[in-house]
Amino acid sequence: MAKAAGIERIQRSTFGDLVHEKLREAIMNGSLPPGSQVVETRIAAEFGVSRGPLREAIRALSNEGLLTTRSFGGAQVVALTDSDVREMHSLRTTLEIFAFELIWDHRDAAFRADLVARHEELQSCIDRQDDEASLLAELALHSLVYESTGHNLLKTVWHSLRGRVQLYWATLHRAHQRQGPKRDAHDDYVAAALGEDFEVMKSVIREHMKQGLARTPTAPEAEAR
Image (cartoon, rainbow, N blue to C red; front, side, top):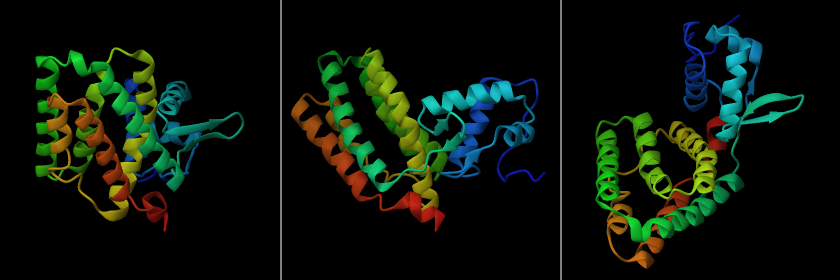
């Protein structure tokens, strides 16, 4: 049986989180491309694990929005359409404004320092031309406001959305050979988040998401062509 490119066999002693990590990595690097079936017997053999931990990983990745499951059809890697991408951007805009509204009067020195540190980490990843790290750092930057709200349902919704956001970015970058966002793409966002005018923050979020959508032509389909 041929082993799919990019999927590495893992030690039998490392189950649970590592199975989840390896399967997620295979989805993000395109070894399991959008729309592909996750065949439990084949993946379990390639990873060198039992089907129990693999099924746990599939459930976790389904909760992250990276897999869809059917009662009798198994699991499939999400294939995002143009409509899905537009909906993600509109939902992210609403959620992020709401998250900042919740924390606006409670932003303390720790929040500000963490925001600056995450922005600097993103810029460092871009400077190194490390695309994978840049994607994770960009998600971490946007995640901070959700983490700071204390709103459990909002954090759950963001958790279920951010996986699809990362998958879309990764697919887009592979299709167009991009190396992360522009270095100054988040300067206005960070400046507004450190500022004192919530109306400016809302405007910056809307513009940031609008620009992100404008820079994302039909990338999921482009990789398949």
